[in-house]
Image 1 (cartoon, rainbow over the protein chains, first blue to last red):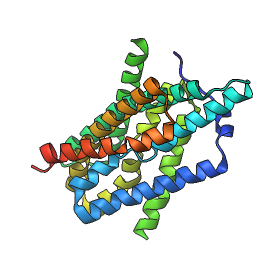
Image 2 (image 1 turned 120 degrees about the vertical axis):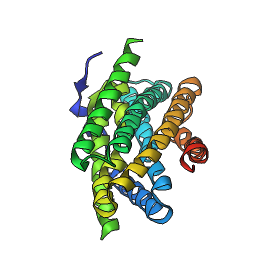
Image 3 (image 1 turned 120 degrees about the horizontal axis):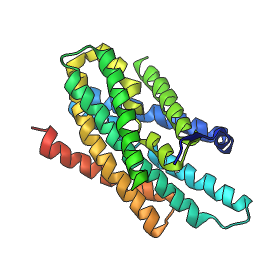
Image 4 (image 1 turned 90 degrees about the vertical axis):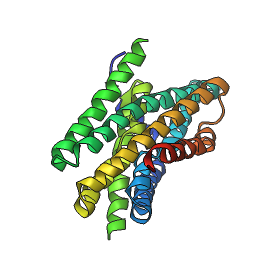
Length: 139
Length: 113
């Protein structure tokens, strides 16, 4: 399956949905910082991988797919929820990349400079996520 | 000031990755961006500046455990949605305790030591 960019899908998202993602992202980030400041980096670090935006993401996938199906005269709810499941499967693959990102920071930071390690960690996230996504698509 | 900066950076980073997830097709690949290290990318520079490398490395070790919890949570959400087709938002929120339970177990068995 080929990678594509479909910019039309941006029109399906309402300004209020963009705003709610922004606010939710900001709140989760502040909360993660609050936990780290008050309870230390061990507990705070857990919340760096909190699925904060995930529920809103799968909900939007379901909503947009339902709208598209309705526009074609179909009921759409059943397949829309299946689409949300596919999104969640993609997220589970992404968490493997997230683990790779965190391992590079964990092992690299005490002894190496921050920026090269951050770039390596981000590259690891991309490489691991895409590798597992590709393997899963081939299965 | 620090809270406002975290809020703005967090909001922007999460929004950028959410937009990437929207435009990238197929949907299974778009879903990968739902597990992007958004919160980490939004806070790491500030945390590094404030506390240094050892502190960030400690956070990153916990982040591995958080990502394992996220993996378990996302797998279960995907299975439940595919098997029974309930509402996506209600399912994702109702199953969030699974993330907390897995993260707490990882903390008790690994991180606390």
